[in-house]
Image 1 (cartoon, rainbow, N blue to C red):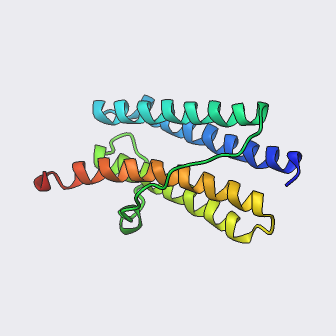
Image 2 (cartoon, helix red, strand yellow):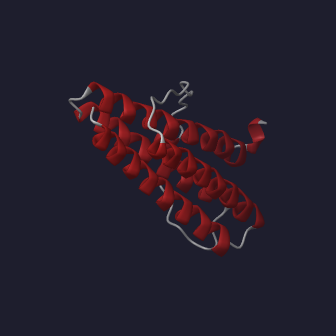
Length: 150
């Protein structure tokens, strides 16, 4: 893959991280529930770190490697709630979980349609990163939605 194509992919990923940061920040500022505020503030900070990481790649392109994350498929069994100021913590986590699932699926689709092996690898790596976010949120969601299990 040519360097410019690589930078274009990473730039797109930076844009996605910015959008996620803005979404999580907005929820953290407008939610009434203190737990939701704290969770979404933490998620926003993580997205900020991901953005910095990706911008570092733009400054110094290199191969990305990610560990496989477990995929519990919880997000796939949950309907995406609508954003509201009065959201319950479990619904806020469900919304974030669905957003991460959508990002993961988008990167998987881009990888599947790519003809360039390096580009395919890049999209697969980005999908794994989003899968890791989704897994973390799924763990939080199951703890909140089903406390009787714990």
